[in-house]
Length: 215
Figure 1 (cartoon, one colour):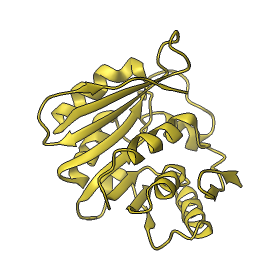
Figure 2: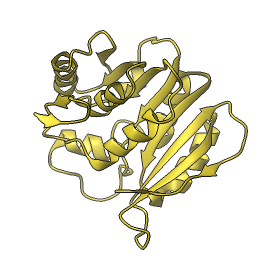
Figure 3: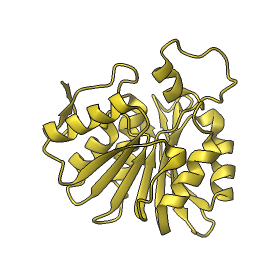
């Protein structure tokens, strides 16, 4: 079992293990989520981000959505192992064909970073789908997030800095106004390796760039 925080632990997904980016995303969101928020994580994998959110925010409830049947079942097992079934559920569904789930207070997402035509794909098809936009583009995932949110709902994304322009311009086109931006870097002398962004559905322009956080 992979230890997490506050006594939580999980069985990791061998095709796409829990990474630093997912952990940073969970902490970024947990620190800002509204009180008693109803949260959705599209593409939740084995549930690592959801479990970190539940561990750090005992007041929230969550719905995870995962296309891969095996990963979705692993996420359910992880919820059961941590006795959090009363606070979270996992649905098996394609993000582009989501059932009616109502409106959420927040969406948390760690989407694939690479465009479909960005070089050779990993041999493992599940790893390829997790890292490359084979089942939806960044624009698709932003539109899905906006559709899941109520007015002034919050979206939390992590993304590579080299695609920051895409994230900011496409989010605004989808009705999600970037509000908070945090860079992750190994040291003050290193270039950022990750960017964390909080967006507000229907929000007014005005972006705060916070102090960077370490890897």
